[in-house]
View 1 (tube, one colour):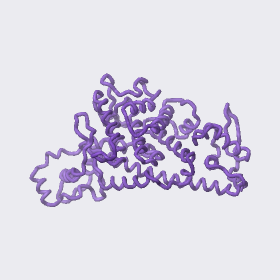
View 2: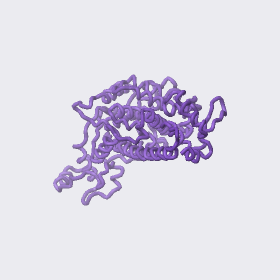
View 3: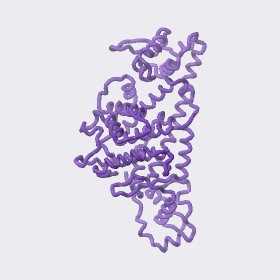
Length: 444
């Protein structure tokens, strides 16, 4: 990706800058729509009357300066990174606060009981594991990946191993309390990269001065877009990142929890301390921090699915930060926008699920023997995908129930003629009976 670096503002004449100040031109400091523009885009716009593009950029920077707050993160030369929360960021943070934390009234399909909620959580963790791995090169299709995670079989190749590892890593971080340590980060990376690296010994280990430091390159043309800090700095930098994660909310330096979660994501990705798997590790830490600070709905989101739709924008948000005086606001705004879209799509998805379950319930409402929510979920899915096969193991894995509970859910559906049983291998496979919708209507 090609990003034009901002001009050297030292070349502007002090007398001319004073004239601009005296004229009252110092005002908004951004474009009319409130976008936090980088020079790369601003240079293509018409500047305000009487100003050159360079002078306009100087005004933008002057207006941003009072908003910028320092971070304990530094570059390799010890220069501090900064961030700001402009109006657009505050608007998005308010939206996330309202819809991702506290006692939120979720659709009954999720909140019916703990097992129903567990089913949706497992599916969300699967989705994030798949998309996060695909974002970093896994080529397994979503259909095959879900079959892998539901069946419990061993992965067939590196891509499938990446996805299975990512799912296990997400589950590992769910058991971690609200304190992050370097040991936890290293174990997280080991789980994520087990069996997928060219050098197996690199799993769960920081790069050392003896290693070839891995730069981040543009996948299209091989251009270096980020040279990470020297390896000898990594132990101290990881310790500093964990200290930043563990600061209490009532500390003297208050940082909004969502902002801190995003900055942790940026921090690990910038340091790039591992041979591979840095992005997956960073996103897992983001999810962990959000969950442990009360944003429980985030576990049901897949930010990697949104990122995978436009991977160039994700990478560009890092580059914009590095080329504009280490201003992480570009990355912050990008990630807040991703979260807003993910939240909106989650609520649309849940609305569809509620309708599907209600449709099934409508068909069987007059049945003399009711179905539990797991059976309703299976029947609803079977009506939408009549050729799909189910097993006791896949049903157990989807709903986090025992094998015996899975049998007690499925066998009555066979007895009532709603599912058919076959045995193509050593395990039974169950599929929807022909005309399932009509059969359900008959039960009514």
